[in-house]
Length: 203
Image 1 (cartoon, rainbow, N blue to C red):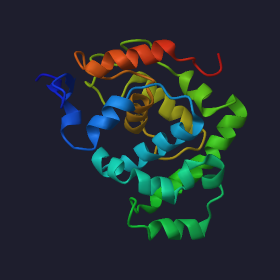
Image 2: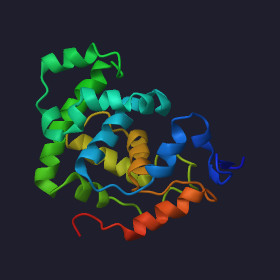
Image 3: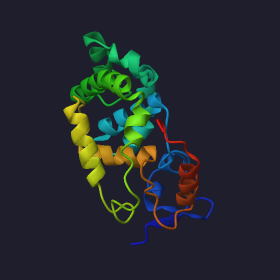
């Protein structure tokens, strides 16, 4: 099956982004583009955790609600959430009301603070794990990779939750640690150029 479809402008894009009206803008402006901001990285990792077992469309449609509920995913603010905040979030119909995922996001904010103290930034840590080109084979052909497995194990060892290899692989795609735009997708080249101009944090 062809991995691309014509977009609204007639140019080919990854087939998946044609499956929901929320996807094209996200696909064209965010997915696969390199990220160095710790708050954005924490948000992306939290949202990928909330997506586990659900559709990405559900999460993307609720993203502004998540941002409001989690104080913009400011790491220090979320790390300070307590039982009353968990109750508040469980009552918030605008987000995914899953106790385990909510508590994982709060826990992970604390672990993020520890990682920032140890590594200088989340960005420096995650970009240190950038895999070699082509490690996971044909773009969009897998849901895990050797790097996502190693990174998942390291985060779990550090006390993070809801960071299994599949979640981490999706996070790697989203933050631009890998460029998984399909061959022939017009955005693939744009993401490649963005990565070439990107200054890897910590180097």
